[in-house]
Amino acid sequence: MNKTMWVDLQVNGHNGVDYSSPDLTVEEVARSARELYEAGTEIFLPTIITNAPELYQRNVPVIRQAVEKYGLQRNIPGVHLEGPMITSKGSHNPAYLMECSAENVRKLYDWSEGFVKLLTLSADSPGAPEAISAASALGIVVSAGHHMAGYADIHRAADAGCKLLTHLGNACPNLIGRHENPLLAGLAEDRMTALIITDGHHLPADLVKLIVKVKGPEHIIVTSDACSACGFPPGRYQVLGNDAVLEPSGRLYNPEKQCLVAAAATMEMCMTFLRSLDILSEEELLAVGRTNALKLLGIE
Image 1: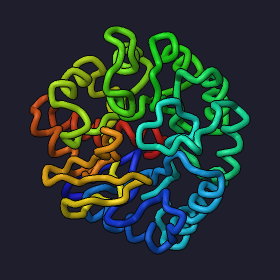
Image 2: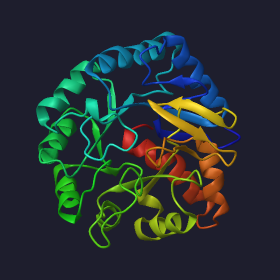
Image 3: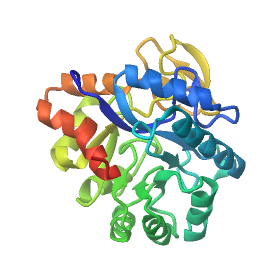
Image 4: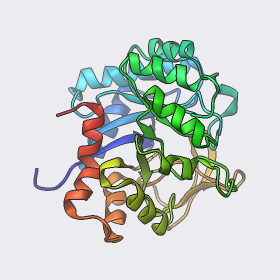
């Protein structure tokens, strides 16, 4: 490859395609994979956010059918389920939240026909350790996020086998505790790799620098958190069940909830912003944008 091709563990959609849409088609999945490849993302996990059981049972097989029909096994090794076992809903629909338990992990696995590669759940849920252990036994990588987890919660999650922190620094209330909060707890847990969104909107540049200094490049994975509005001009859109505004700057948010709604950036855009901070070497950029994610997924 002449140019670096990135790996993205959290892609909600792209250019009008929404993997959480009840109308998702095989052809849309294939088109999005082709367009993402052209935009610099070689391998990615289509991400389905908190939703009804019927949606998981429908959409994951649709994604898998696209993989098999169009030979996308290398490009789409599985899906990422962000929720529904979360406590801090953010832009997710609270009507579809599920109790965090080993039983519900097995339900999600069955509904998705075993095509789950990554599962985000909340570390502050009472049943989190059991759910993490159950998921790990099924070969699912577990990430902690969308929570208000403190130090003890995060340590327990790591003890149970949780390896990642879903978009660290986001998906929590705008006001959090000064000393006990999920950002600091995540930074303090050396066994967990931080998944961060470096689109220039989700995290301030100085916070990105701090996370890099604390975690080190070997324990950071960049993700885009891209959604169906990625590739669209500024305007108002329906994104993941939210009335969202896409500003000329690229910031995508829900004015009513006062929260960001995924991102309108590709991995190439996220890596360009990260490179502009001049805090990582080219070798380290390759690690956080590609090789660390490949290792996590067990891909050569």
